[in-house]
Length: 303
Image (tube, rainbow, N blue to C red; front, side):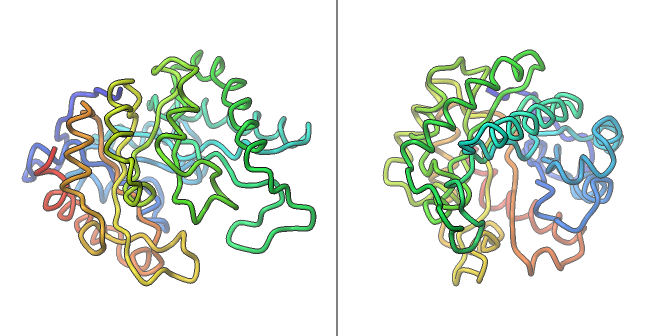
């Protein structure tokens, strides 16, 4: 479990609970890592959750310095994964890329590397399948399990945990063949909790009738590595992936889900991760302020 001592390092005009708030860089997609960190620190966040693109833009050692100089923690690194290749070349490429991601996570100082496991072989993200797409979900999930087993020793050597993120079922074809927290926990079960954990991302799991039970199980197994929040807003965008909304603008019951996560014993960072074209067009500082105010209103009171 991520048990970093929550503390406010900048923006002390905010509540102490804001020290657990993390700004995922996907929420401010067009900002550099330095710009995102400055906005997060000024607003009063305790952490940032960088994606690999902003880390790779400056190199992992420099990314670590940028985050530290802003007085922040790296709550996680997004993302590893896409483990579903069936051919030898594809498997080698996936393993090599994920090993680089593990090294990047260790360098920037986070123990949590979020994995989106990938869709069916031959799928086209957001589009029609290519010719000869492999529609065997069972076999595909089996390959995901095999690749996790391949990567666990390397990750453990670097002090990094593989963190499995189930995605909403609308993304099962092209982005993630695991759709529920229970599926993610079953994949994690053969490994120590320090080696493989799970993400509770409200956008992807809020609909699940077994969610309370699965969060409680994740807590008992000490596998909750990240709690990510954003809202389910309608209507869906033409690209459903970019339909996430600010907390409080949609249909998700953050009080209840946050209470379940709290009762499961999670005391780590809470990342706001939003994919939304309109939000991306806003100034970075304004978005950071909005994200933190929504966190303080809808999430923090229930921690």
